[in-house]
Length: 532
Image: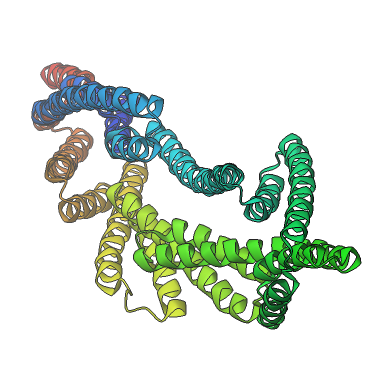
């Protein structure tokens, strides 16, 4: 009986190995490694063939072929996508060379949607960098534009200086050259500032000389212009007072220069010097006022841009513009609105974070990682509550919750099936066939619920075979007991018949050596009956 037991154990081990290979094949399939899955199914088919389980062998071979065919289709699809993504990246590189970073970023995002996961992450990172570069280029262009405007204003002012000198309007020329000096300082043109100052000095000397010559000429002509000058001087001082009250420092500066010139014409150089000193003291305020004017202009530009953008579509741009606007307001000393815009930025950052979570959640859902997708959508919904926004993702969360529960249920069924199969194998080792059959039937039921119809059929066939073997073993053992009883009763012919029947049952369950052993026993006992 020990040989029979060894053969039975070997058969059990082989069956065990088949089950292990099938489990590995399923695992490889779920990981997306179809080639590996096909290999495990092929091995399972070969062992099943040796065990005489032809139906199972055919089922496993069919599975193996299906996996290989599917793998080829996927490889072909991946090759097509690979070629498509390469063409897209070439187009993106051409756009980058032309400085069109935003369009290039959009192409990288599109390439990421069809690329394998590792490369998709790389392409998304590249897209983000290009979007940042596009924004930096926009800000740089705006700064260049502002500088260009100042440069144009500077060149225009120099033209006014030239035309004023050409027309002999020295007072106007001095006014414009002072303005040109202020702009040149702002543009950092230090050498030109010195040149303009030298030119201004020459113009002032010329102005004084021309006034003296005019005065001398009028003396010779025999009439005085003092009354006329005093009238203009009085009106200039009145205008100067109004300009100072209105804090129009540029105008006040120009009027101080005009008053100084009039004082010189009236023969009052000390008063003229006083007015020039006052004008010099106002220069700093003039520069400040010019800066305030620029800041106010920039504030208006930023507000206009902000009004045209959408919070959900242009979140990052809005954060940049609001940050710059806060900086402008801080320089202007208008701190009352800064807190309001800080809150705007906080809100936009939450919208940006929610958008990022939503994007990651969709990617996770596409990858069938429903638990992660559900977690990310719940975080996004929490942000919506903070924003007091109606976007709560309730439908998406419910859909993912159902999918996640289904996945969990499938995992539980797989675990239950594994436990049932393990129990069945243990019970077989203990020769508890009836209980082993029950466990294999449970495994078959679990496989049905998972949709693994072929695996379910395999477990049922194993259960039926074990049930059949159990009946044969029971009958065989009964004949052996009856034979031994007949020998005790010295009924050798009957004992020989019983051993022959036991041999037949051994052959039914492939216990060939055991069958031969009982046949020999039957012959020996039959010979013994003849002797007696």
